[in-house]
Length: 152
Image (cartoon, rainbow, N blue to C red; front, side, top):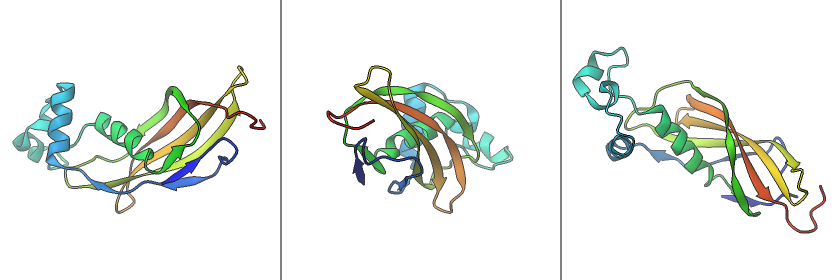
């Protein structure tokens, strides 16, 4: 994992998380948490008859996994004050139980906030399978504390 502060972060930098394999437990816990037991997720017989031939994991689980795994690719040395949102999120390929995934993080922009003591960091996140199939991608922004003495 890489730990960087405002002065070290630059557009174009890329970081990669560790890999993890999606499990039946991950799938079941997400269905229990959200209450979404749609047949394509929960019913193996229904899903077998579907064109994909098996149950698919929720798109929302992919977003949650992406946001979590990114923290193993890049850690902020500056205080994270809050998330500012997700934009342009797209679903490219389904996730299945047994897939091994990882996240790529690309720094898109860093800019001082109007207050002068904070900055906005925009990153592109890509969720990929171990064979490099792109599953999901989007842009996330965060507000961080500008370290004392940092040149904007």
